[in-house]
Image (cartoon, helix red, strand yellow):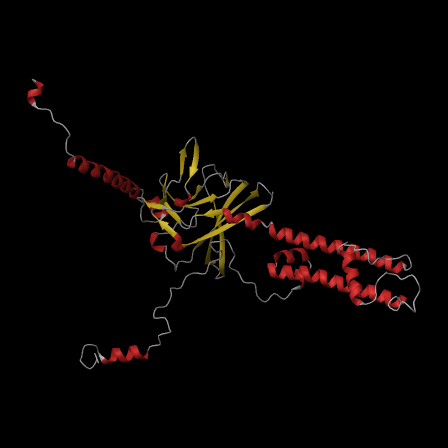
Length: 390
């Protein structure tokens, strides 16, 4: 109707009617695939593995790496299969000795009270789990039955040791402790001691400490060698600095870890305009240490893409002294504030230090100008007249 009155062009109406309402009108922006997720999982899919038998050479590690439903299924089936196997053996011993037909066999059976496969299965369970109800027992009539009794006890102990050890290792895995080691959602680049620095914040939510904690950082990006070889995941280690010095940290309270962007840094030519989701850049942070309570080595990982790095911002303080001790406000763990920072690369800042001097002068004039305006607007609370001086 609107097209007939000339309000809306007819071509637009036909175009809108021809569109499929189920299809999205806007295409989601393409983002670089992560090598390490924010939670520390490696985003790598292993395909076309031909030598599957290598996993069976390390059965214990394979069982620990399985998911819980698969582990519980193997745990249950291992006991059921062993019970059924030895039940068949006990039934064959009773059948060969003539114990299933009491009127035709000898007076003393190999195993008392076994008359069918069901009773042999119950006796197998009693032997392996050492229940011993007292209704069935092995006699000295058959030496083979005594040997099978010893073998089943040894097999049952081995199954218990392997499966219980596997479940214990799954419940005490090191990555469980890493759930309480947190990193800031964003990283920042700002000035510290006159140099551009890449900064992030790390903290531990538990009171139990991480002993011998160390932190490492790598830059992962796609590179091409001078010979034309394409390296899709080129990893470069870069040094991290902290208040203690070196890679070792004393993680009692949250710390700000920083990397000085100098001529040896792979971030030396990184500019603010490069911090977008199309930039091929990922910075991986790895925190590793020994859990104080269990003695197990744990590792926490995270990564930062280019659009997760904030230029010209700084983390707010979250540690304060209250009532004779230090308190940490984790509600401000990832909060940042804008600070004056040159909008240039570290290379350009090293070549032209006047950019830093101009930034320092501008930041110094800002508070002074605001203070002078505030003083001018303020009204005096009292005045001195000439008569009072005489």
